[in-house]
Length: 531
Image 1 (tube, helix red, strand yellow):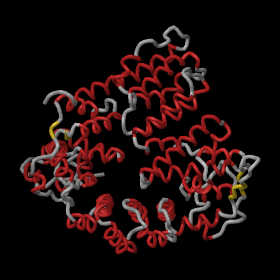
Image 2: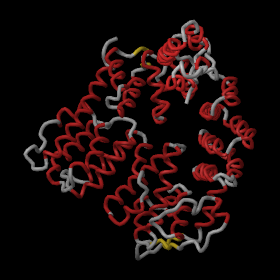
Image 3: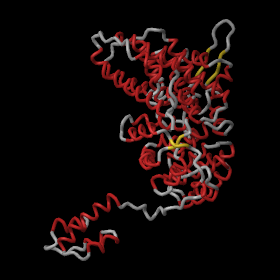
Image 4: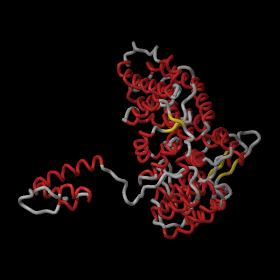
């Protein structure tokens, strides 16, 4: 209990409590001349007003002067007044998921966040890390300067003009978030210098900090980082070892991948036949050892598989699936057909799908390799849609991998899936709706009109045929509302089966979806207004 609270409860006439010590220095002189009871009440009122209106930046984060970079003409222009009003509405918790779309549109139109809304937007970024890159892109010079005045906003404090001296100062004396940001920035400019900086401080870092700093090497990852990552495989902290394993899995030509190839060589063998289809002979690892555990085999449980089958899946997950298309000289669909004809198809499918996720998320593939990984994603998706028996072997976020593809490629592949499932939807298309919903949640851009119309028209005509209740579709409809082309959806608001017995339960979720879509349409138009 504070001294001020104690004085309030006991009364100034019953006890002499030096509550003035808890007042800011500037307030003490303002109440010093009043009698004890009056002084207590005035102190309470003054402190309340001070708390609400008298905030000063903490002494630990000294205010910085506006630099020459900040005073230069801002490269971003002010946003239209209507767009500013809509951002204010979004920040008042109206359609919070659409904050990212406002930021995307602002970047598209080269606009900055309005000055009056900068503090609130920085607060949003402090709690929603996924929005930080989009926020930083449209902060403007004033926003970057403001971010340097508050410890919680340091994730947005850097500007393109920051030099190596600024980065070094953040690295030496900054918070963990500042140090991570400084290391990532240095990795982008000078990967070798960044590695040397991390090596120099590694032994003094806490285990928790090591686990946060090591993933920074994913920026400009190369074989020059391999020796350091190999040493991190022996770290006492499990989280550090997991990070090192994940980085090495996506580093072509590294020793860990070579060790995986040597382990898999006696386990997988393609039988080529002239008169019969080729087949894949698969054997499970006989036993585990320290070297396997060090490389992450068996580190993560795979409850759908047995122990040894899980080891096999972990080995496969450490290599790009492109290795197998090249080794077998077969397409992804042909490789999966080989897997389905094997007793250990679960381990094969889960291993390849996990490998696909890790390599797509790494974002280091060449354009040709990225397209080839997209072929694997499409083949795995088609297999999942066609075969109930393999669905249990997929990790839950598998179809978010569509978000890692270039937007045009992802949209084209999703359209192919929709077309392949026919013009009329029913319960048989429920798995496809799950795929589309996951892809929608991972999408960073709206879907084109053709894909949006294809999905919505099929959903509208198929609604009476679904046997599952409307609440089952609510998360799917919420995901669609974020990506369907707003201009194209005007033609889809009418024609719903309002005479169906199930419409009463569907009407609410459908209306909610179109409410979001209409808001998105207004949001898009707001950036097209004249300044």
